Length: 504
Ligand code: BES
Ligand code: MN
Ligand code: ZN
Image (cartoon, rainbow, N blue to C red):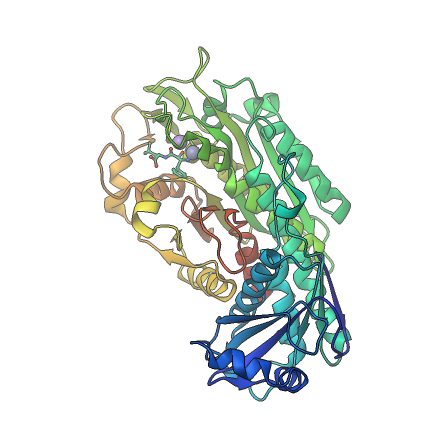
């Protein structure tokens, strides 16, 4: 999508998008179009229930006296009450209509309004929402009829002081690039995206100034990552530990403490989860191609931070494995030794995410002594039972970190809900044979016991949060700024979290 900004004018072709305020009140641009069309806007509004409430859309086809194909009236409610997310949702919903409408070009006419954000800010966030919604993954559709494909190529945002709006948008555009990178990774099938090919994709971030290094099986064996390697041993695909470093803080020398300890993001990257010997049922197993959604988000947020040259030191670490059943696969009952030295009885090979993460988390702490760690993982089906597909689960040993993450999620529309941790839950993974077992064995609190498992690999004094994104990494329905499919959840959340608290 080509998005540009220019001074107010009214294009004489393509679609026009204008706002209407609460109570059917026309914005100046809408009023002027209404005049030109001999009152078509007012008559259209009078035909039905459109009242200018936030998110309502009314489409006027072939407006009188104009060469334009259509006018989209977008309800913007009360301007004083519009959050950035509201603006993005409006831009996204308008884009969805335009994509379905068949135009190649559209113009958003953004007026100065009384109350709320400046016209330039509103323009930038409308455009950001429209861009996010215009994402499409169609590389494997070789027979799609041209008339079925969305034709919209160009959105012009027309606003006074367009240069300011453009400057605001340029930062947001870098974030969208990170989100799209994640959506692509999450959507690729597992025959295309496996540990080594995911690493090859991540290496593209070197162009942005990210240092990318990789550990293979041999190196991980040397480090004693028996938990991660146990998951990988049934697969023909070699596991990888992906390490991405971004040094953006002023005066930073390296990611290992000099010039400021980094913030660390750790991702579960199971490129396909069959369950292993504890095999999953056939129905729906294809969903497990997106069991690398945590790793995908970590790659995407590093992309976003580097893309917009964030003034922060950040490290992203992803444990990449494929969980397969085979003659070399690990068995229920196997005992593995993690890098931390703690032993684990693997009672269910389908509880593999925690086994991958525990070694990645330990490696991160040993090598970077980070300011804080946030891990992201499509970890449990139980979180979908608890929270559905609306919010991700948040588990943390730190109230401040929890509040910062929750606020960031709310701001960008990637909400989080905190669930408890505690010694009573921790007991559930005590084990007779080893230091711990990888499942509780009981039916209750599956997401919490998974988080307790991870917490056993967090050193005293390290602020840590675990985001269980199993319910939100993939969407089966369209949302205003997120078309159905891989959502890119986590990229915007972590980017906003960094921007708000860790950039100096
Ligand atoms: N990748 C799954 C969790 C998952 C389920 C993600 C559905 C997305 C959608 C994870 O590895 C898993 O299999 N978890 C098990 C744990 C159980 C064996 C304790 C689960 O949730 O059933
Ligand atoms: Mn599993
Ligand atoms: Zn899994």
